[in-house]
Figure 1 (cartoon, rainbow, N blue to C red):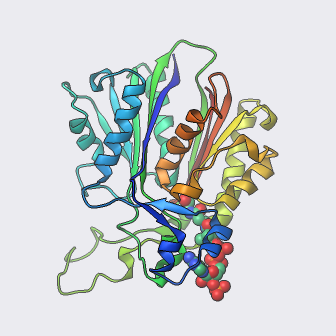
Figure 2 (figure 1 turned 30 degrees about the horizontal axis):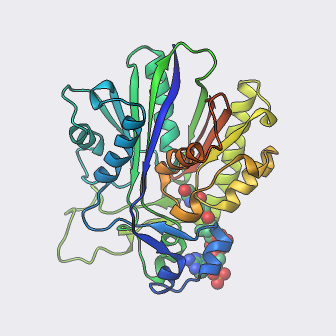
Length: 331
Ligand code: UT7
């Protein structure tokens, strides 16, 4: 039994926030943001939009494109950085929202920017083990409400955006078009170097109305360390994946790389000697949507005809944890 990608879906909020809009909130410039990251604008939710509402929109699009109903799905794997509730996980909320008339497992994973590859690995393993036939993977990320929009938080706040991506994978006997292999890694050594630590279960009392929350309610990042590790690990994991499947980088038709920084992706592809034209970017318009970047970018690449059935494609990502991974797929 193998696993193939059936359909994808995506959703980004309609509200566009340009670099010029950020100039009004903090000491930054369109020139700095574009030069250092490649980002021109991002999307932010407006009141009423939630992790769940974006997840539902992306999931429904994937279901409609596959001509399926919710009940045709055997399992949900959901991931995000900051969930609507601390518990239960949004996977259960999504199960309710999509209108299932039967109970299915809804698994929430927390693997940050590499989350989509972790989800794909789990889905592929469960399908190969004949546990489930069709799995819906959804990533939905809200960053805009967690960011420090003052100059103090500018190194991170200009990078992230809101959005959701979905993918349906299913069992197939096809020896041609299927997920060939996925490699995932983590190294907790630098866990705090890209983190959002509060509110935490370790605080006594957890919420104290008499104490100002402080800066740790905002994400923190050691940008240079993350950058360096991202380039090294993404390159390493691609080589590992290619070597263990005896495939040359030159045979890859298309790469969908995590959308954190255009310079990171240029360096990774250059290191692998894969031409930059063999990829697609959404970073310029949506910023870094963490776990959602791969399904969103793949969805757009498909719609724009940059990827077609039969192509040999790779997904590659790196993020907080640190976590990283890559996937090789005959689409
Ligand atoms: O999803 C995975 C996680 N994220 C990533 O992979 C991101 C990895 N890191 C990066 O992309 C880059 O490190 C950044 C884009 C965050 C920063 O680029 P950099 O070239 O490493 O810049 P820097 O942090 O060394 O900052 C250079 C200068 C500093 O000023 P001084 O000390 O040279 O005077 C910063 O204070 O730029 C300043 N700066 C800004 N200036 C304008 C930092 N953020 C901003 C900003 N606008 N938004």
